[in-house]
Structure formats: C-alpha cells, structure tokens
Image 1 (cartoon, one colour):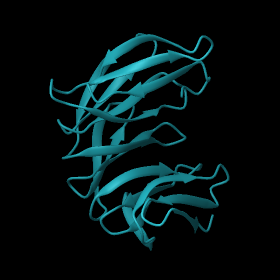
Image 2: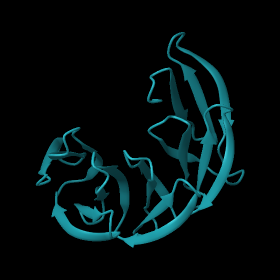
Image 3: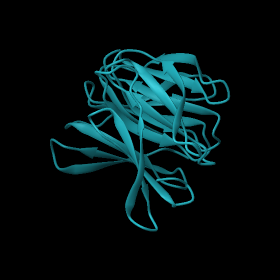
Image 4: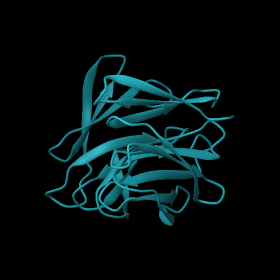
Length: 196
C-alpha cells in the first residue's frame, strides 16, 4: 500500500503489477515489471514518500523501479540469482533485497538505483524487514531456519537468531523492540527481542 493509503499495488505471476484505487476499490491500471518476457515479479516495497516502488523479478535476477506518478518502469537493477523479498528502510536511503538463490542480500542506493553492497547471510534468504531507525535489517533464512541481523551502517551480519520450523515472513514493531517471524511448519509465530 502507498504511504498515503490511496493506492494498493499487487504483483501477478504473469509479469505485471496492478494498481488499485482504494477509494473506488477498482484497478486503475497495470505496469509491466518484467526484466525479461519469462519473468515473474514477487514482492513490492514502497519508498516512504510513495514516489517509487521496488519490485523483485525472480527469473531475471533484477529489481524494477516504478515511478508511481506515471506507473512506468524508470530503472532495472541487476542484483543476484533468485531475488525474493524487498524492504525500503524507513529513512528511504536504501532498499534491501533477499537473493534466495545466492544466499545474499543486495543493498540498493535509492538515490542512484545502484547496488552498493552485497551481504552474505546464509542459505535461502526469503524475506527482509528494516527496523524503524533504519540501523538494522532482519533477514529470514529459510535454509538455516534462522534470522540474520544486519547492521546497516556497516553492512555486516552481527548475529543469527535460530527460529526452527519453516520461517517465512518477518515484521518489526514500530518501536523497534520486537521482530515477529511466521513459521509455516509449526503454525506458530516467533517473537525476537531486538534489544532496542
């Protein structure tokens, strides 16, 4: 959802993103997000000002940048194999992309739309969330059954929290004190004390 709540963006396996007007609950347009014709977009993250959306394209190993005012692709950024999750830091400076097939996270500078760092995080990183101060990113590693904690100031993994089960999605509370991780295998939610 856009920060102003006026539009919702939805990815489709056929390579497009639908734009939904929340006032009318109707689709107002579509955007072709594919890096190549066989691609499929996976996740979307909005910048805090709502001016851009970052969309992961699993097949081509790219991220599409969408101008939300014109609903057009303004940049295509090469990351690594199997991009899946994406999150934009609350300060809007960087976007973090999990590369499930490469066991890495790509860091994108949103001012230049270039990859400025690649962080090794472990087997099968699928989703990512950034804390409210933009200083930590939490990456779910399905293969490790754990969450990697990244210090975004140094782009290094500072700790790994074992979760167990089959971890999937992760969110951080607005105060930054806890991260919640879903576990498909156990039907439970793990709560991480972030120490913030």
